[in-house]
Length: 282
Image (cartoon, rainbow, N blue to C red; front, side, top):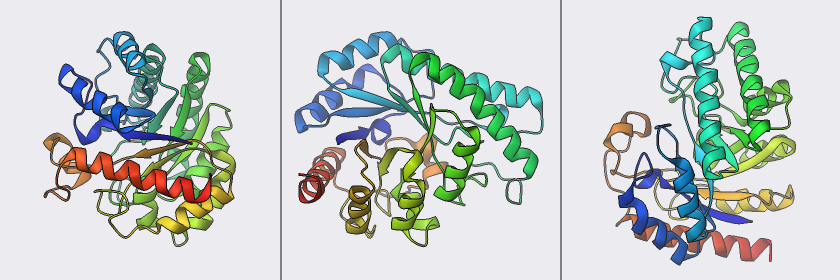
């Protein structure tokens, strides 16, 4: 098992000011970090070397928006979505990120007023298959992320996500599981995990209020017990949000501080994961 921390708690992109945070995360005992990929024009090769020097492995997260929506009814917009996702894959290759995860299957925060149509589903599968082919060339695994109903309408449940990646039918396109979204959408988190076990490649550890894992109301014992049951042995990546990024507040809906400080969350979150792991996997 590998333990990681999503850098969106501090910043929306890699920058020099993050170096003390990266050093702290390594000192705390994290195996790696999840890199926000919203700016594709950074020198990711250089950042990959820096992360190697720190001994931090890495995954990355990206999104799509309305102007590059892979399920748009406009073929030009769909093509822009595929191109954007391919660029994100290229950034992963440059910095040595093993996984590209996130809701890059459709435009985040955009709603049609109904569930996904058959046409949108077909466009989404076709768009993702093109990206998976590109990811295979760079050795990057895609981890498609379902989001709760308040953030998207295309993939909400993990069953939806699993059906989607099975239809994409490519070895470099799999599913990620997120405890925050599952807490909203799944009647049984345990059954949701069992049902997607064959395509699962990544897990986000996120508390019900997006704060310090283990201090909220997620069914943690059930979640970890089931991950052990299905033989999961990949990343447990903490994803939490605070007030550091006002530009993404519209998506995260975080308006108040829910933990003392970022170092506290990172420290307590890792201790929580290590304890859960020791109880079940050791």
